[in-house]
Image 1: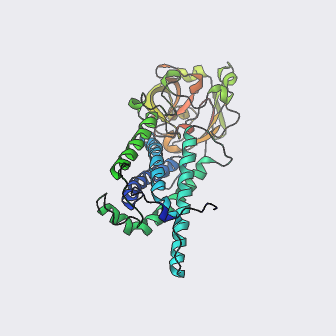
Image 2: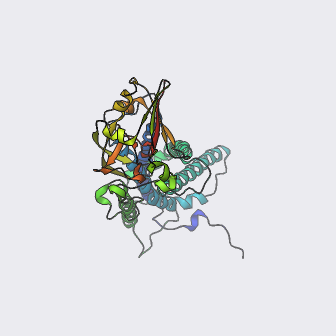
Image 3: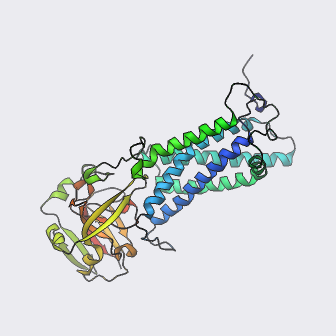
Amino acid sequence: MSPRLPRESDFTSRLRSPAVTARVGLWLGICFGLAFVTGLVSHWSKVPHPWVPYPTRPVWGYRVVQGLHVISGTAAVPLLLVKLWTVYPKLLSRPPGRARELVVHGAERASIAVLVAAAIFQLATGIANTSEWYPWHFTFVRTHYAVGWIAIGALVVHVAVKLPVIRAALGADLESSALDRPTAAATAGVLSRRGLLGATWAATGVAVLATAGATVPWLRRVSVLAVRSGDGPQDLPVRTSAATARVTAAATSAAYRLTVVHDGRHHVFTRAELAAMPQTRSSLPIACVEGWSAGATWRGVRMRDLLDRVGAPSGRDVAVLSLQERGAFRDTTLPDRYVDDPATLLALELNGETLSIDHGYPCRVIAPDRPGELQTKWVSRLEVLS
């Protein structure tokens, strides 16, 4: 006899019940909602001139936002796996015979397929991004942002369709069998519903603790899966080293000069001339899209003071060019709200020492509440934009 495909009636476990699914789904929805909202804020922070300007205060804002984004996404992984396990038999149910019911059934299945595919894609690519592993050819940030909208839209449709069942399941006792499949039956000696939920919450907590140390310093000793431990030159992690960026020779050369351009006028500074200017100290965290962050004390020339030397007016953006010859962040635009902020520096020192070459020697940009990948290292040119 040839094997047949399983049917919904073949599954008899009481653990695969709406009573469990709704409770796991509630927290999964919270995690997805939090990841979506923080993802929107993260995207907002990278737009040079959004309709509503991204604030420069609090200075730790992006650190919290991106940390919550990665933590909530990580927490969603065990929750999604358990939820998919509990609803798997429903995917094998036979479609209804009536045309109207069949259309509704088909639409519901299509929305579930989109939701599951988008959710898996978001979590898989998000985890790969935190590890800086990119086995694809598309642009991660744009694709992740676009699929995020698809995932949240499919989630809203799914919740709307299933709302009566969700309300009934959450309103009833966990052990109630009112919404169970007819074939569900209690089996002695197996895990209880409360035990399954307890194991799910524990797995979610372990996943969070194992990764949250990338953002929360006092958890670093237990966060064995955190992508950044906090270690690195001058007590700060390094995402891209000078060797990787191929700037070591140019950055350490005696011929290095910083060129500042405004309205067709050029002013060239040696590093010694930058160091001779009035220095300002700023305590600013640096936070990256992968979810890691660390606090640091920077010392250098205020961006506004530097531009005043060339007569640049306030309210202007600045194009920042690195010594890097290639790379996505070789050149960036520093919006005027950062340029004029007194905490924004062209940093020469980090944590009381001359800036390490891997942290941007001879000088780098550091601005409050700004994504780390936009805090340009090895700066060679600043051009005031009109």
